[in-house]
Image (cartoon, rainbow, N blue to C red; front, side, top):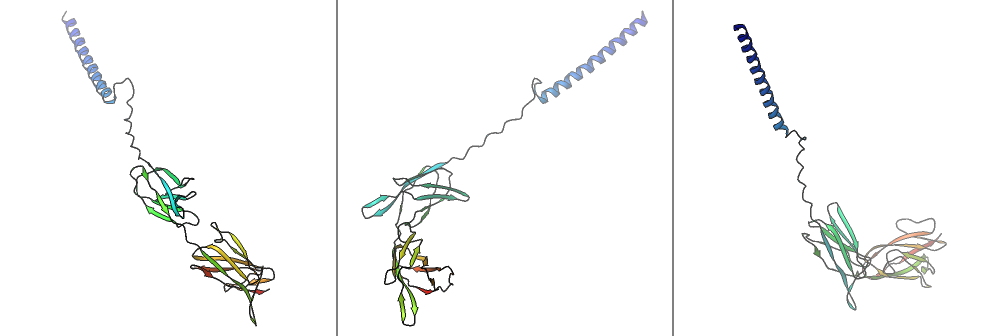
Length: 238
């Protein structure tokens, strides 16, 4: 009976040690699961907070100019907005209206351009939808005229039927030909201040040009216009 008692005590001691080890393992697993989540599903990373989108605005208005009949709206004006590398264009409609959308806050430049009108540029501060009406000025035009002649021993001899081509004068949109009369006279209206190339041509003649002559009979002379301007052109037989 004593021997059985000792054996029983040893068995109880082993059971206690086993239970203690099992409890320690269970507690360790519980702590590990708590650190990783509830064990039912893997923890997902926290989604980043979306950044707020930058607001954009619309810049719009009417482009007008003074005319003999009063203030009129101008169609076909190119309106260009620029800030840094950003650029956006719009064209005015029949009512002179333009609109530029999707414009970020800032201080961009706005440039208006149209043939026969002075280019207008200004800065504008954008922090909301902005109305910007702009008045532009018609460019002042002048008359460019002169005599096409041949220099002989007896003096100047006017040359009739010389074709003179002006790309930047002659009308509101330019691109005009003129032909000399019996007096060698040519004339263009709608010429603007600045340097204007003239292409001169007549069969059997070449232009006497300080910058050189052209073997095909064509020659270019650059007329400097400053108000109403007289610009004579010398030619010579080929």
